[in-house]
Length: 212
Image (cartoon, rainbow, N blue to C red):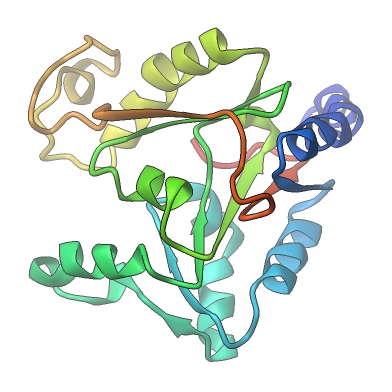
C-alpha cells in the first residue's frame, strides 16, 4: 500500500470509529489486519454459534479457518450441498454471532449495503444476537450518495464476477446497467443509520484495502 494512503487511513480511521459510536455501534479501529483478526476473535465468545454472509474481507483475513481450528460451533453454509445451502443460510439468521462486511461506510458513521438474497442485510437488521462487520478503510466514503455510487458501479459488478453463470449485463461488460434480471445482486438496498439495540453491531475498521 502507498504510504500516504496508509497515513490517511490511520488518521481518519479513529474518527470514523468515533462517529459510529455516536450512532450506537460498538466500533474499533485496527491499523493492521493482524490487530483486526485478534479483535474479531476476542469479540466472539468460544461458546457462540457463528455464521456469516458472503464476505471477501472475512475470507481474506482467514477468520473462518481460525474459528474451525478453535472448535467453534459453526452454521457453515460453505460446508453443505447446494440443495441445503438456503436452509443453512436461514439457520444462520439465528446464530449467536454473524460475520459480514459492509459495502460502504460513511464518514459520519452509517452503513450501506446491497444484497442479492437478502440474508446478509437481514442479519444486520434482526436475528443474530451479535453482528460483527469487518471492513477495510477502502470502504469508507464521504456520504450516502457516494456509497450508492460506489456499490452500484464498482462493488456489484465485481461481486457478480464470482458467479460466472449469472445472467446480468455487468457480468458481460463489467459495468452496471441498472438491470432487473432475476440474477441481479442489487435486490435489497439497506441504509443502517443507527444500531438498535445499542452495541448489537460491532464494526472493526482496518487500515488496509480489503474486500471488494
